Each structure stands twice: as structure tokens, then as C-alpha cells.
Image (cartoon, rainbow, N blue to C red; front, side, top):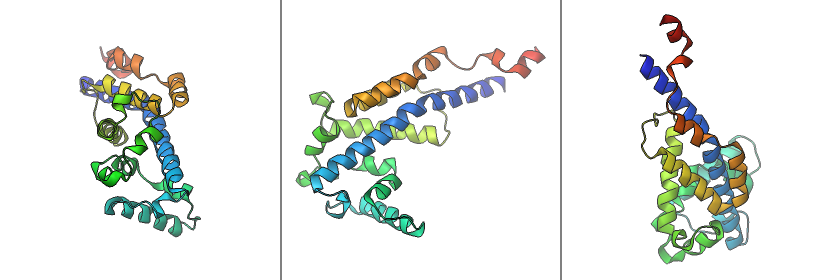
Length: 199
């Protein structure tokens, strides 16, 4: 029971330590995509003129409907704020490469600081969706303490943020404590005060 609790607490600490990287990556990528799509469309409500696949188009309509129900103004900023990270990740799908609807032009606009060999939809899609899966595990309180590649996934999130906006990567560096926490291992036994008293 003690081991299970220690791992549970360590998992909680790891999730907490991953939050800054995931938060900044999600917000920065969303803002970068929104800005690039707005410029391409020549208007902030780019989703009104760029043809989206049914699933993404439905997500836009759901966001608009939510704003209406809440009595809020239907602005581009309001719609964008209601869209999930999954929505933005779906724009990296191969579906949006057909007819060059979003790709390859979107890569340079959104990830201007990425190495050239990484600035391809296929690679970016693989990376961003890997982080999306990690984000979903963290936000749903699922165990990830046993992931052998957790440090690599954190490093990938940091790199993606650098490719999006180096300044935001600097902001992350000021608060990011994942590496030292992960390297120290699970919560030491003596942290469990009642266990110490029983010994």
C-alpha cells in the first residue's frame, strides 16, 4: 500500500510539473495557428472562408452555439478560446494537405523557428499529436510515472515551443521544474509521515 501511494503522489507531482510546458505549448500553438489562418484568409473569422472538414466545422458551430447560449458576443477571439486542443491538432491531418488547403504554407507561418527537415506537416502532426496524448493523460489524472520516454516527451514539448516562439520557451524555462523532479524518482518513503511513525 505504501508503494502504491508513493507512486500515486509521484504521478501527481509529475503531472503538476508537466503543466507549464503543456499549457504554454497549447496556448502558443493555438495563437500561432489563429494568427496564420487569419492572415491567410484576410479576416479574423478565417473559419468562415476556409473550408474545414465536417468534424472541425462542427466544432466551430458548437463553439458559436455555446457563446450564444452564454449570451456572449460571437467574436473570432471568443470562438478560438472555446476550441479544444484536439481541434487544433486535427488541422495537422493529411486531409488538410490535399489541394494545399493548409499545407505546406502553414508550416512556415506557424513554426518559423523549426529546423527545415522538421517543418513538414507529417512530422509536425506526429509531434503535436504525441503531446496531445500526453496532455490528455495529465489532464485526466491517469498514471504516467512508468513511461520510459516521459523525459523525451517533455523535451519534445519544449522543442515545439521553441519552434513556435523562442520567447515563450524562455518563459517556460523560468518556471519549468520537470527535469529535476523526474530525475529524483518517486516520492521518498520518509515523506509519508504516518509510515515513518509506524516504523
